[in-house]
Length: 465
Image 1 (spheres, rainbow, N blue to C red):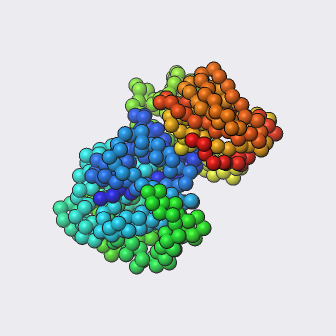
Image 2: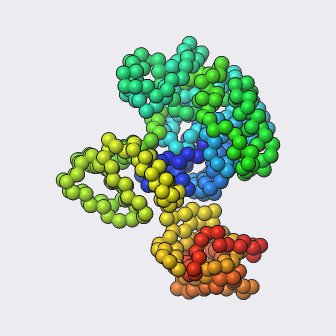
Image 3: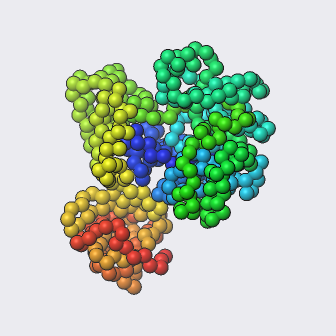
């Protein structure tokens, strides 16, 4: 069995922590792990020894770093890199094509990286139940035993029993109104649709070809033109022509052989800040805090702060999320409207929709500390053994001061070692490359000066490392 982890999506309801370049799967939870790391560990717990991650071209290096931090080199990792989002049906199809080229009868366990499952053992047991019907040609999904009449989830109605506690699916239903959700809960025949699947790669592709021939052909055309390997880069022009459609609409709701495994493994889609707050233990007044906060005469309030103390006085039922460049304050019963805030910011082309001040890169990260006309100041962290590209800028000069670690600099043909407290600069038009030869992180301050400081002012040259 190969695990397929879908790590796309924008997670707009968890702004300002979730951004386009730092979406929900990469958010750190109170225990220090990200949702993506938890999905990876969950797959391994369920028996996968290979993990194929489908993610965006701006996220796959972050995914690689997240996996490496877990320290499980025995688990093989592969990537399918999407140039743009096209929903779950195409994403799963690309993964199925990758797997089917090796063995069309291989089982694939499809997980979403933006969900939380708290009982891994129960999840592994549910996956074990799904394997046999999947091997018999069923498309197997997992239904969550509902604990309340939720109106924000789709539902699955079970049909005849197949084996043990596995059932045929009678139908999928859309998000219901409150009376319908209550009827579903009372009937005992309905489950929340978790969006987790298990099936043979070849069965999924055959079903897709039968039900969605145009979609299947567009995916095949893109696949044949794509650069394949341990990192498969999908062809941008052809992938843009693939229809944007979910796996439920395209396949699961129409397929003739669909089974459901009822499960109770502590599932949550963390779809809002109110849901995320439940992961933090409350104090005697029902307040939950991540970071540093002072709360006086305050009840049932969630505070998450990255870099500074937050003081709250005489408030109740609030959600307060403070990041370096954006602050969210909302009533707990209004947090679903955060998505509308993001839509308005996107309409105004505001940078906080797309990125944090801290930007992750394959070699490390940087955070913009201050920016004004004519200059920009950044803190740059370079991982051991990593290097920036050899490059030059036409319109700006750069100056580095080392705070921690040791750096090796190639500057216009000269090589120099720089240590804490030492500085080096590159004028506009001068080729330069920075490398971390040590075993510790290289931390430095970068000062850019010039009339134009755009990210596109770069000419990359042949690497010297």
